[in-house]
Amino acid sequence: MDPDQIDHDLKAVLISEDQIQAKIRELAAAVEKDYDGRDVLLVGVLKGAVMVMADFARALDRHVEMDWVAYSSYGSGTQSSGVVRILKDLDTDITGRDVLIVEDIIDTGLTLSWLVANLRSRGAASVEICTLLRKPEAVKMAVSVKYVGFDIPDEFVVGYGLDYGEKYRNLRCVGTLAPHVYSDAG
Ligand code: IMP
Ligand code: MG
Image (tube, rainbow, N blue to C red):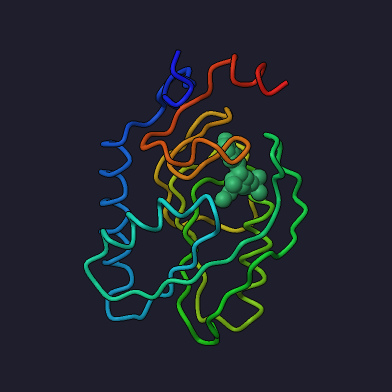
């Protein structure tokens, strides 16, 4: 087996590249309609949302600005800790701005709930969330998520920005990992 072929590490493809791209166009169309005539600041959550942001922003047929935040919540494992540490804050003053958070996945929503409260407290005119993927646990979230690409089962997934130990972000699809990947990792 060629260790450079990352798709050999997948157990199953959950969402194909075509399905992702079609869904992103759908989400972009909805956002264009809802934000007609308003400035939008897209806020991407590093690093997972890089791929979604790149495709989603280009699917929008209008002006947008982009900014990024980074915080740690996961480490290299597969369980959410809910502990938030800011690694990179916004460069933009969001007072009076319509902010749309762009996310790869919402699992518990712990980190995202914290981010929404944080951005609202800085005087944003509105703060909404657009996520490509959502796990079942996220329905318990206090904040509502306006734009959801796919509701997926409660499984650990990689690809299209999502990592396992910083790998697999560059896969074009979203999939589950084969058992040998976890056992090799020890
Ligand atoms: P939450 O705070 O539990 O919603 O965790 C959100 C973050 O955990 C996401 O932005 C991802 O970075 C990471 N995460 C959650 N589920 C997965 C997964 O299945 N694969 C990879 N990363 C995940
Ligand atoms: Mg993320």
